Amino acid sequence: MRIIDHNGEPRDTWREGVETRMLASAVTGTMQLCLFEQWCAPGCGAPTHLHAVEEVLSVLEGEAEIWVENETMRLTSGQSLVVPAGRRHGFRNVGEATLHVRATLASPIFEAAYEDAREASRRWLPA
Image (cartoon, rainbow, N blue to C red; front, side, top):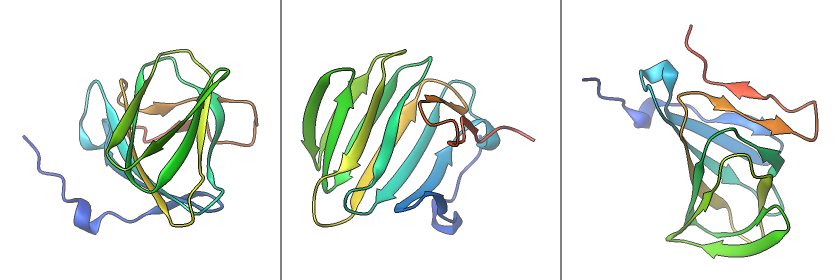
């Protein structure tokens, strides 16, 4: 068993207006999931992408607009959305304050296919 101390974990600037902190992944010893938090400035978030695995997006603070394929919905603090594997999705902060979200992927690494090839498609790989 391993205790992971998140208090000392730095935030990583993933893209402009989006900071990310990894909570658990293959780097910390997980075998079946990846868990991370993001803080998004107003208007910022995650561009359209897809994963080969299921994802749960949870809004911890703020208001998010989330789209899955052609369906768009708004989530606020205390709400989550299950994104089925292989479905194109994304989100953005539609509030005036910072959006704080937690993402859980059914894979020990982050792997995504983006429309924008400049996006990093894999993260938190073991050494």
